[in-house]
Image 1 (cartoon, rainbow, N blue to C red):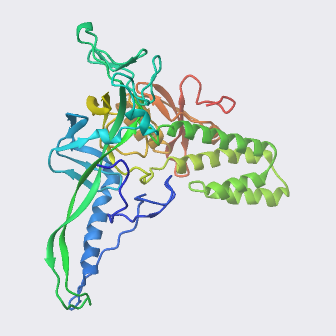
Image 2: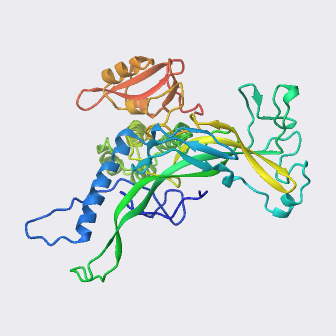
Image 3: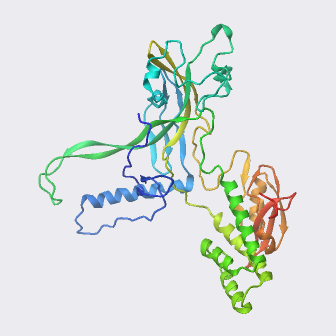
Length: 451
């Protein structure tokens, strides 16, 4: 058992220094080009050639993470064990690198190894038998990693300290309680030892080598924050999008008002042009003809640049891993007792359901339960997008607009069953496309309204 990620191992994707929110070397597992080995008659095959074949097959299989996502596929149930342990059943998961993580047999795991101890061990050892340990939470306070909600008729933690049952005749007290998250990650081991040739073309001497790589899964744990949901790196996706959209639109409108062509050029250099490629030439033509600026024409370019940015920003990304490549299986609540300086642990509660369990899913367009993400439908043919959304329970009112309206801040994530306006424009090929969505009550958040 370990509480930290193991050193990087050779996998289907390249492991190298990256900027995925970590320092040093970590597994980002980005999209990479494949190199397929080629064989020919008379070729002298070396171990590198056969290994390249294995790596190509693994890398090709790992691409499924972009099609199907990653998370628990089946099995891997976590249930109660004795003495601060849990039992994990056999099962199958796909990690964020696209690797198959298979636990072949039922495994007992010691969760107590993730117990967060007091920095001063002497304070714990010298504590009286019936006294709360140094890292226990005082009365009338709830620790960051303590349970805070009642379940199944048992209060796990209350405002007066550790839990008691609802039956006064069977009261029990736990001096301290903490929460721990259980993960499974990909692991490899070697087997099938065999003697090598004493002399060979590879120039190596005699010895012993393994002939098989056993792929499997390894359990590990990390301290958690009570009943607080795990931090989702995509949780603020819509908020960040709305903030960025509002900032860019406001800056472009201000630049147009001031006739600041340089600000428009700076925007293009930063974000590029992806849909309306002629906008850059249009700016140059304005600058050459007017020998200065034309605020009226610049205001007409603002919505083009906004839609261009929007189309690029909402394209389906090939997501990569962050600092955590393991798959979360459950959150476990532990209790600890001290008796005569000796400690004992008990597993109190196991929650192996979302959000404490990562089920198979993709990450590119995040959405909370009961919500609908409208991002995939931006700049799609209007008839197709409206029909798809209506089947999903979103009532869509198509509204014909012009490119002037495309500088508004759009509505991206809405509750299921909402009524929204789909602002439709006609492109160069006379195809009606959705420029942006807005609430039917406010027309899509005008720029003078903070999103």
